[in-house]
Image (cartoon, rainbow, N blue to C red; front, side, top):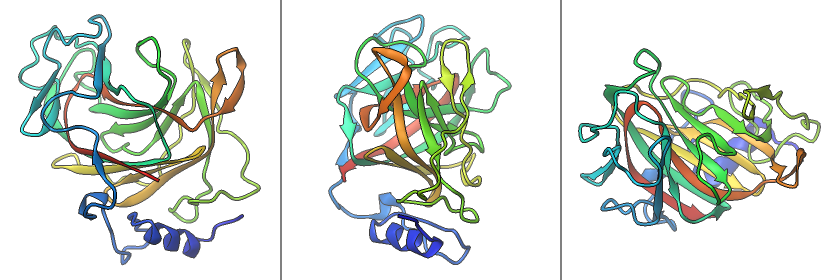
Length: 273
């Protein structure tokens, strides 16, 4: 089934998602929708339901890399007392999720850490991560959170078909039948990665941003401040029995990255689809 620009906008409206393919189009942010089946994924008080991992440190937050304060997750903020080269890592849900709509808000802080003192501030949502041993750069699909690159997709040892662009709006929620080629993979040494750029730049460097992830079957959509900017189809993971083959991918844990930059997360919530 193919999807026209008009069909895509209509379907987005019916699911209460925000889309602004044209300047006059209305925006409906997930945070503005009351109730609608939302449940907090982060309770604003502690890390119940989440696990911690930091490269070189392990599963206990030895250096105060994560603080829970004022209803927020504050990563690498003023309470951090570790080395100048802050080890990268993540917070991970203890549970796997499938067929869901995730929404959260983030805001950058001023602190940056070695070896990325002059890099763009960087973090991300890693999704469809299998349970098991914790390590840096697990197999995942990354929803990139980076200065003016928020919404990009980086499948790591996973792969996806990028949606056809319809003048700045990715085809969603249905792919074009002829669009069946996987984006090229880059050999990053320890893993294979795809780099899938978003349709436009809609993040703010100052103040709060709202990002949403729709994971439905083996497809996914990335929304930044009310704008659908990335859609993925045919999600697959490397077969654990034979890494040269791929199998359908539709579920996994959700991770929030610790990556050499101060960042705050709040209003982390999820609803089933």
